[in-house]
Image 1: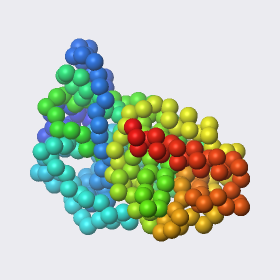
Image 2 (image 1 turned 120 degrees about the horizontal axis):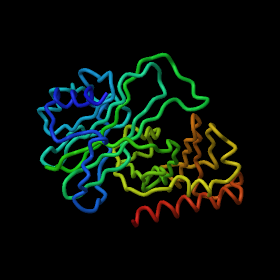
Image 3 (image 1 turned 90 degrees about the horizontal axis):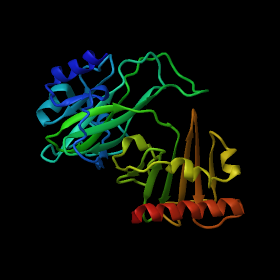
Image 4 (image 1 turned 60 degrees about the vertical axis):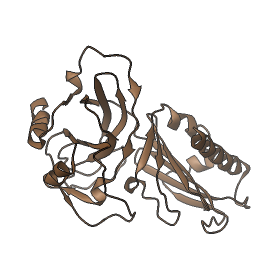
Length: 288
């Protein structure tokens, strides 16, 4: 497997990249977090040949991008800018290889660096308990922009909890965040009139652990009991009073909640308190 993964780098003309089992023992100083941006490349590009085995890559120029990916008109519901400034950024990519069914995924979670190397951490997941899959071949991938670097780059596979929470405030200002147990994502340029297909948005990542588990404790029982359903409290209208948004991913279940900014009769005391908790959390995230 290692040779197959490295062979992709040879084919792409990459150097200075390796697997986690090749990490040097000399740490070259303390590691610090590296800011990175999620990039929905598949909205505007398709890979010319999907890797059938697990692989990873670092695209360092427009020429390399066009050599191995084909640009097309935007196929996503969210409008996005496909331009990458390679004088400032590189495109890092991870591939799970060919999977026999749907339900598989791969995600870059954090990036750290020291005086010698950059380490890109990622994890993979399979179908969740109770999830309905189809016998369709899939090729999971993930793409992020990292600051341009001359250091050696390593990809390190980790184990993480896939469950997450999305919180948002919509109306005159739209702020949306995803809380994971490994990082916090701030979605960029959210349009409140969209259907919140968050995988199609760029995002900035902050490395912080445990945020999903911590915020889950504030979710009222009546919302947890909605498991997999969508419910609206009041009549939140982005063009008028606005509201808050809550999305909970647990295993194969996705629960979506919209709560009117105005207190309405269908909002219990617990739901009103939860609405405030969401607003307070968003304010705190904006200040940090």
